[in-house]
Amino acid sequence: MGCHGGGGGAETKTFKFQGAGGNGNENNSTPIPAAVANVKIKSKTFEGALAEFKRNHLLANREFTYEVDRDGYVSQYVKGARSSVGIASTRNTKESMIIHNHPSGGAFSDADLLSTALDGRAKGIVASGKNYDYIFEKGTHFKADKFTKAVRRATLKGTSYDNAVDNWLTANQKKYGYKYKRTKN
Image 1 (tube, rainbow, N blue to C red):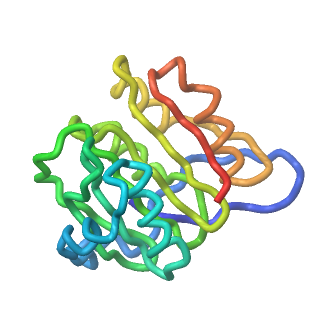
Image 2 (cartoon, rainbow, N blue to C red):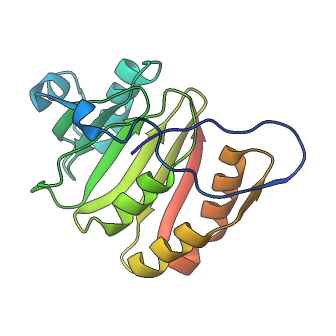
Image 3 (cartoon, rainbow, N blue to C red):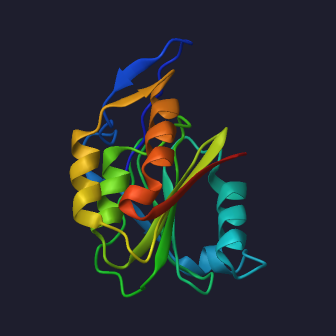
């Protein structure tokens, strides 16, 4: 997973999904005991975990991630690099939501979407930035193969990268069987 900056300006531009930032070395990720997060989360729900995550990491200068199970408990907590964070692929948790921050505030990278789409245990992913939370959740009829091909080939249009990603994900929800929303922080 990684972050990236969005473009500026008011005119419509064309973009491709941007790759994850960083140096490609996911070994910069350091596990933190999940209990550190769980003892702070008052409401054991996804929303409670997201609120606690944002309280601790929304303005951080590096990426962090929580893996949250369907009961609202953090099963993995990881400290990453400035623009990337890795999470163990040997997870036992099914239907987990991955929450991570983007210090630059940007929308999803291709790595965020592709890793979530191809992970049969992941229910979805959140990229939390200074201005917005971007939330992607797979539906019961999610078309992973078609979605990953579409992400790799997509031409995005918008006034900035973040706006273009938001437009594309909003427009393609029904076609690929997922739910997407962007919420203001």
